[in-house]
Image (cartoon, rainbow, N blue to C red; front, side, top):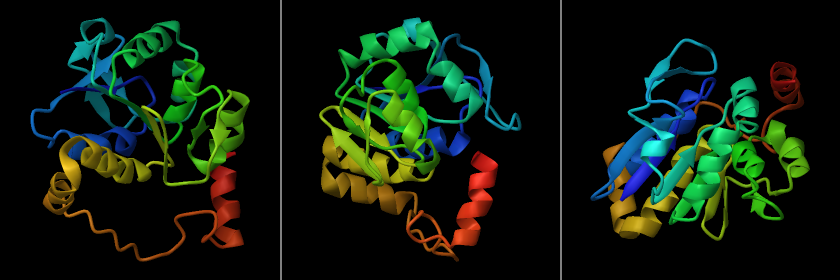
Length: 208
């Protein structure tokens, strides 16, 4: 199973590393980081670099695609003809085409989410709807072969669900135990519904 993890300048690291650490453990998985060129790409804060082993043209027919989000770099990728053309062509072959966080804006930019239910980081909900999708405030949303995850950490949850579709519940649970994914955060402010007004205001000032 060929799994392509898209890289571009300005991606968010956990968006792509979280799903990778889940999906690369699937039996027979051929997990590859891809980009416009086979080169290194800086993340959104320019403090981490990841290398695409293959160019997009070298992976025309992946079984699974994972698209990470970010900020300015994501908006640029959502307008990049080469990335969008590759996504449209790849989607014709995939079993699953997925995104994490604002990566859904790239899928929408390729026209793959037109009229479809989808999710993204809550701060980008309006932007996603302007691109033709129907925003759902859920951890992950499936629409046929398309699966979108909410902000950053939701990519791990989405990837475990995807692993269950591919390898069965037992296989996905084994991966979950293998990576010891058993969240117990010290605060319960991980969603708009749970965060205090003060926390929401602080985060809105950063994302605004």
